[in-house]
Length: 63
Image 1 (spheres, rainbow, N blue to C red):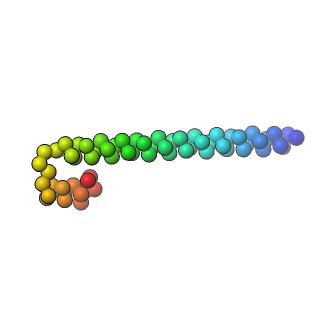
Image 2: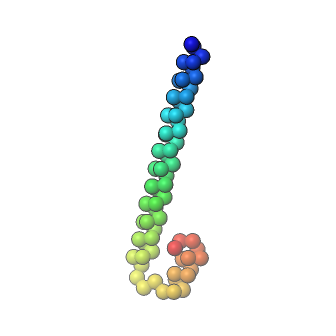
Image 3: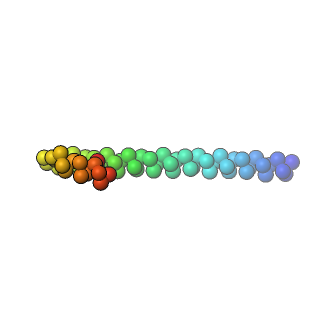
């Protein structure tokens, strides 16, 4: 009986831990998406981006 209760509490704790981990992953993905969108907006807001400037940004991994 005690072993069954211990196992049940263990499984419940594992499930709570998994759900918290999923929430953290989703939050980090949302933060990354927001960061990328913000950087894209900054790049697009720059005036008269020429071909050479765009290629430099692309090669630097910022575009």
